[in-house]
Image 1 (tube, rainbow, N blue to C red):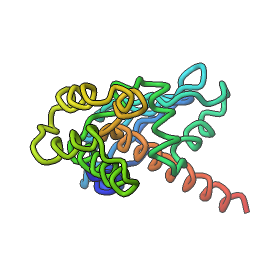
Image 2: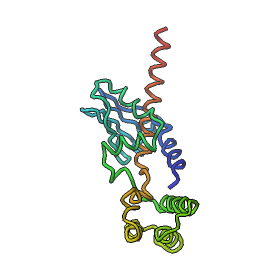
Image 3: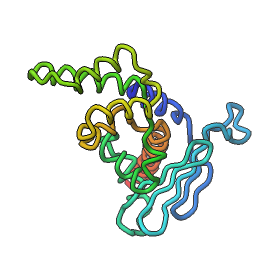
Image 4: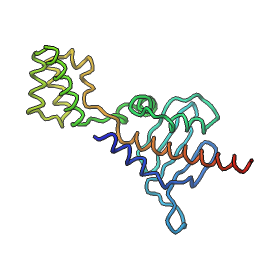
Amino acid sequence: MDNQLIKRQAREAFVGHQVSRQRDGRWLLQRPYADGRGWDWTMAAEVISLVGGGLYVGGDIDFVIFSWFSDSRDHEAKVRWMGRGTDLEYYVRQKAIIGTGRELIEVYDEDAARRALQAVLDDRLEDGEASELTDQISELLLHGDLADRDYMLRQLQETSSDFVADGGYRIGMVMAARVYYAHAALARLCDLLDARDAEEASHAC
């Protein structure tokens, strides 16, 4: 999974979106048709400020709930809290896991697993730590079916249960695309809210 590519695709998916409907703590983002006659539901995104500090993003994209913001009535502050977040791989990811559950927020990626195993192998061999584990990792990299996460973990577990328990079970797990798209929708909403505020400020002068 190419994280930078997905991030770019997610941002581009909402470039033309506008707020088509709005009420207290709830926004619907859609792209207007070119002829101005209505709204396109493709990639429509609904943002809802939830009671208790959660923030829901869904619609024509896979939903994500980000938690927890302070239980504030300032719904726009909650949108900016997450939409202006720049640390996607840690902070945004953790808030998505808290609100949505790890099983939906993280997915297994074969290429990521291969890179991680190679890094472990290189580090251990560089430190002179050749062992049954490094032999098993080499075998997995050369001949193993890394597309099958259960198979990979079984092979590692049989060789070194300590390695698996000490974080090896996380090898290959990456943030799901749904989080990038939900965050991009929030970022677009932030841009629209900022543009509205700037326009209102200019009229007040």
